[in-house]
Amino acid sequence: MPKSKAEIKTYEFDASDKILGRLSTEVATILRGKNKPTFVPYKAMGDKVIIANASKVKITGAKLTGKIYYKHSGYPGHLKSQNLAEKMSKNPAEVLKRAIYGMLPKNKLRNIWMKNLTIYNGEKNARNQRKEESPVA
Image 1: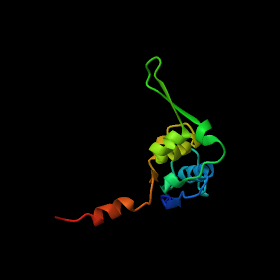
Image 2: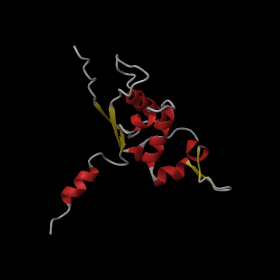
Image 3: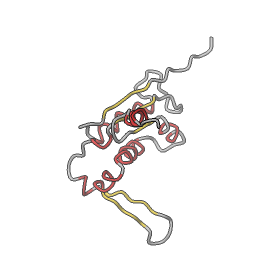
């Protein structure tokens, strides 16, 4: 008898008034599939996750000014830095994505797991509602 494929579920989270780190750990666990009884660390058997309202996530402590994100272009002297407040004002979904990305194991499966993650800055169906409301000639 052949082995049946594990069912892939879709989990939806509303990030409104949830703490960034606690939401990220919960999502990372689901993406890996550690919540399933058939978990094995060498397979990508996690579920899909959709997060809405990333802009309303709660940041605790002095992280808004104290947490610094760095990026480097590869050229000497081109180290750029932004604090969490600047990053949240530009793209809150990127902050949540980087938090989840950092909580996943650093191996070949990490990019596969991240493809199962969808993050919306506002409501989940905001994009579909705008298309329906637009008048047709």
